[in-house]
Length: 205
Image 1 (spheres, rainbow, N blue to C red):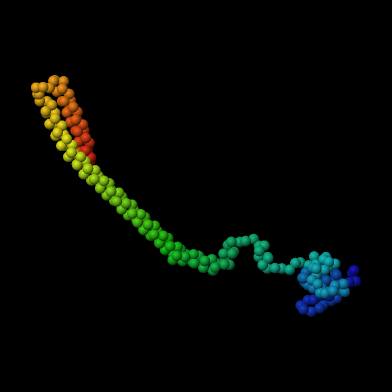
Image 2 (image 1 turned 180 degrees about the vertical axis):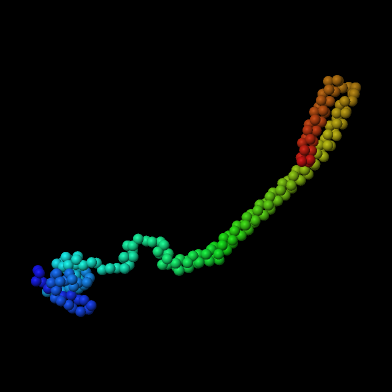
């Protein structure tokens, strides 16, 4: 196995042959292509089974992006390197607040005030309409009460006349009949007075 010789491709040219031990010092990368009599085509070193020990003796390729990803994140260092970007974003944010967000909030506030004012005016108009309807109903009640009061005044006058006649002396009427007539007339007067009192309350409200 030690007699096996290998060729390398480096910088676009074929070099070698080298023994296994020599490969460890000649190979620059685990992906360098090698060839031997046992290999059909040029094959990356890390894909040749018998050369795995040689492959492991070579440090892996350095990847700057991976190295940066493995570094511990340092905020102050990042800000120092990207201060222009941070400053630009901060300026854009301030401009957004001043020219977009503040006017938008003021517009919303004005709309809310306009809506509140409209609702207040609408409630006031509705209250006025309700008060007007109540006043119209009250006037109708007063008009009706006055008409009924006028009728009761006539009825009261008739009841008073009846009471006066019942109180007069009649030759053919007994004292019991006189008391009965007086009681009936007085009851009628009290009933009318009670109704008049209720109507006067409605009128004088």
